[in-house]
Image (cartoon, rainbow, N blue to C red; front, top):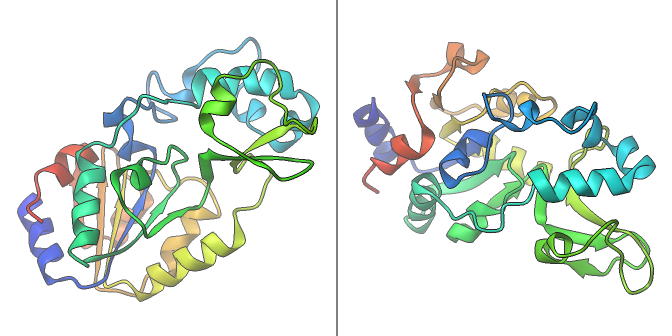
Length: 238
């Protein structure tokens, strides 16, 4: 299967990578639905989906930030073989863009520039009063509800349940997918809208799916690889 993927990459000129939580598991960041994933975590009687919602953030910011610091921030995480492969593909001018559902910032940490973080990033935080910027470390090392010097609450620039995706990031992501000749979908169940609908804009030749479990996109794919994203991409020669 990796040989087939190698050939597809060699023939492609405009590759776009669409990735989810499975891309970062090899870096020690849990995914959502597997055993030990984020949604299996207990936080009293509250579910992660409830805590990570827009309404909960505004009603109970103290509980939100307790959960956020404990389960959403991984300051020691480093890019894995998948991130490094994608960086090499961008350097070779094969990869035209990375559309990621992840908020960990590891694609940019690996060196990629053409990254569309459609769910935001833990590394971008802002004061809700004066719009001052703050880092993930500022949030991590704060206590209770993090506040700016002006007194405003500092909010992570991550998309919570009930919030829209960032408009201009999505416009750029959809432009790249529409113009791609190869789309690699990896480490995502594509179960969350509207991100799952992004694939409808792909008009290229090769749709490649790399995932541990079957997903709906398998039916349209020209190549399906069952396996760990980091292992599959790490075995490629760029």
